[in-house]
Length: 368
Image (cartoon, rainbow, N blue to C red; front, top):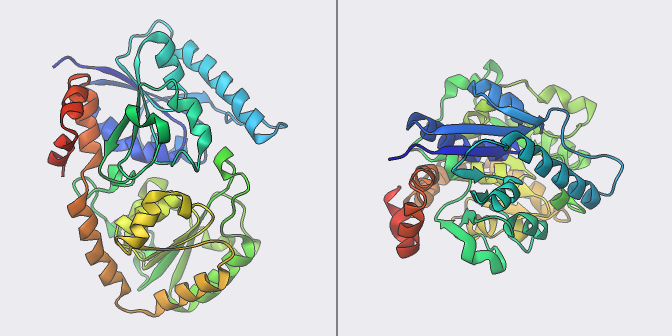
């Protein structure tokens, strides 16, 4: 098999987690893999911890201040495409994967993939990437509208790309002493709501955060993971941990509460009782499926404050809830595939893999 040259552009920590195993597996198989990033939250720290070589296109962040969020996003896109052209000029690649690379791929005739798990109706600005992309990688349950002819549909969730038990085994020894020695602990995740698709969206505000902490404190330790500044009196709960180990913390906690669909999904498939409080979940098919089909997550919109707090109280008082959720997770693993093993096969065998997938989409079922 001819070894491929593949370029990944990782623009967010969630993209790192989604592609992490694919990059590792492709490297192990002898393929040449390059990585571009931009500064975003803890993204660079995650790559440094992996010991990977990478190029940071925007060391000072690619956000452009002083403009409306959509104008800033457009200017940022133009700047990104220019930098991608500059850094790839004269270099040969077989595949481009991620974000604005789809434009460079379109113009240079290089096959490009755009991975997403966002429903088009909920995040319509994705069209700017869908149009030039050769293929769109998305979960079976994700509706990408009229672009479905480009879809490489996989039977799984994004979180299974790095948390499938074929690759991930929770390790309690990764925890710092405060949680390693705790009989019970809980995680609260607060996002920053700074992206274009976050416009006019809300989640756990300071008042709600304070009320949640008051409920949890009598039952165990509390860990707050936040992208935004939180009240001073709660900052001591933001324990410094190795960012690469967050999945190990989630896997051993007793309850996860968040306004991040990504981390709530991760928690749910790890068998942790999960409560989501935001304005996202009802727009995303996988959250509906996790709640209605698998009963692994409870979702509340931001006007349902009392209902959400009552659910938290019930959850921390139920001694059997964690065991029940661990059992329910087995249903997901029986139904879904090992996403990273499937995509690694797809990338390294492209375009033959695409032909085989077109003839028989169920070929992915051999990756369980």
